[in-house]
Length: 188
Image (cartoon, rainbow, N blue to C red; front, side, top):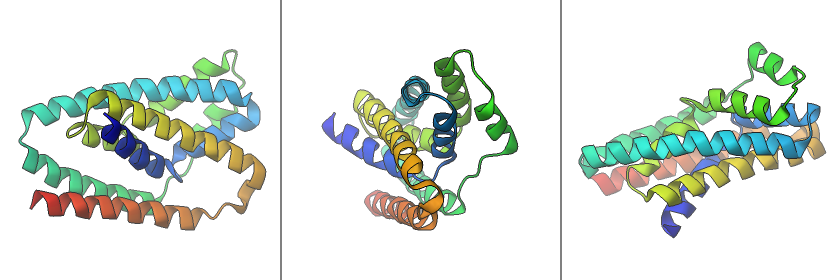
């Protein structure tokens, strides 16, 4: 369980760097109380990653290990490319984050839940769950994402637009490429 937790935490924390979820977290936190934003993010992340680990476990039980490792390696290399491409908030994302909310926790949770469906962190969690323990993967991926988003809020509020976004994207991509290569070598 500890290995699943640590690997999932590290991978998802890195995957979240420069992701649109961090931009949404910062946008919400500039308009709403930070604690309520983080509660909404945590609830949505726990739910999405809970579904992800069950999907990953089902795939892991149904498909032999070697093909899963090869697909996971390709996926991680793809996540590296996706991270290099980067994410931007659309006008619709900006509008949803700017709307006044009666219940900030529900509004943030709902927006994050929908934004994370099919996102690279969800796909990475599915991939990790094919080969690691369910609870450790779920807990590590959930905490990794929430801490990355909390870090974006804190650092973003302190530094504003002076964050080295390009360096963050390149570093995160390199880590994905390394994971992908390691998985591919292990599969072959």
